[in-house]
Image 1 (spheres, protein in one colour):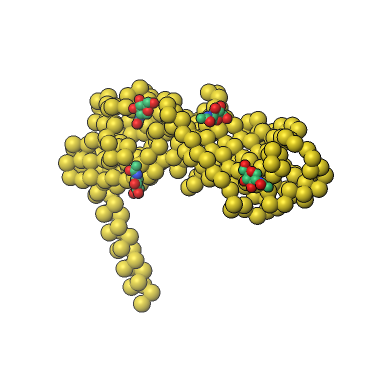
Image 2 (cartoon, helix red, strand yellow):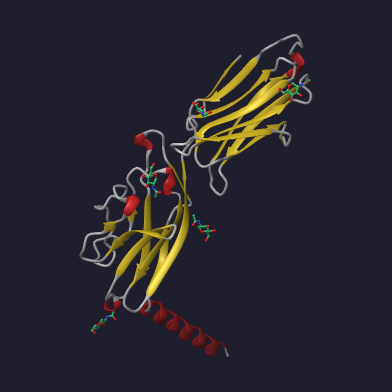
Length: 267
Ligand SMILES: *[C@@H]1O[C@H](CO)[C@@H](O)[C@H](O)[C@H]1NC(C)=O
Ligand SMILES: *[C@@H]1O[C@H](CO)[C@@H](O)[C@H](O)[C@H]1NC(C)=O
Ligand SMILES: *[C@@H]1O[C@H](CO)[C@@H](O)[C@H](O)[C@H]1NC(C)=O
Ligand SMILES: *[C@@H]1O[C@H](CO)[C@@H](O)[C@H](O)[C@H]1NC(C)=O
Ligand SMILES: *[C@@H]1O[C@H](CO)[C@@H](O)[C@H](O)[C@H]1NC(C)=O
């Protein structure tokens, strides 16, 4: 019984192997879920998209490799010829880049030159021969980090205290939350502005304190959905010590550089 099962299992494996070996298959599409454009040129790690596949040299007749961005083809490569780049990706790919000297793999991967926010999107690699076609897709989110991230509060002329968190020049639009004593504040006014030319966002979240005369811990959290990108900063609010006659009082914390995570506060 066991012997028989073993045999069936082995036969299955052999069949599977034969099937894999005789058809064209994309084994690994290397498209990162997100890529963050560093503000300083020297910190930039290159953006590389890879397309790995198994192909039988005997079945490689008519081989063409294509890359598409949101269903629009921008790259084509045929072995022993130079890759061709179309439309808006011209000038944004390093055509000398190669990860392999093998004839059928030499120009399958893409290395970007200065990636931009609008390179966000669905990427698919399509490999085809006269007999077979294989395609695989994945989504890439380009992130442009903020130039400004500040949390603060301000006494309004009518005596109320306004807490605000501002995120400046970030892409794509982030989720911004105010958190008071570990509880997310829902009673907020959110304003979003998008810069015409760059498409970057400024987001501001404001909240009027319900009780401004007690001490509390105020945090602001910024995240970009479906990515690992997260920023958080916090400040103490010493409400018990504030005298009601204080008029315009501004307290501001600014995160100088997200990577250094240094806070500068002033009163
Ligand atoms: C390719 O074809 C040649 C001749 O037809 C044969 O000798 C060789 O074993 C084949 N290679 C593979 C990997 O199938
Ligand atoms: C990317 O693919 C996803 C899932 O297939 C789809 O929902 C989305 O609309 C696509 N985006 C674009 C810009 O084509
Ligand atoms: C991205 O935007 C630039 C202009 O800022 C434009 O020239 C280019 O065609 C766009 N690229 C894509 C892939 O949409
Ligand atoms: C003060 O003005 C703000 C709007 O600027 C308002 O939301 C708040 O309720 C006012 N506070 C009082 C005590 O009227
Ligand atoms: C967006 O934020 C940046 C940085 O804080 C600032 O310089 C710019 O003026 C803001 N733009 C708008 C339209 O508010």
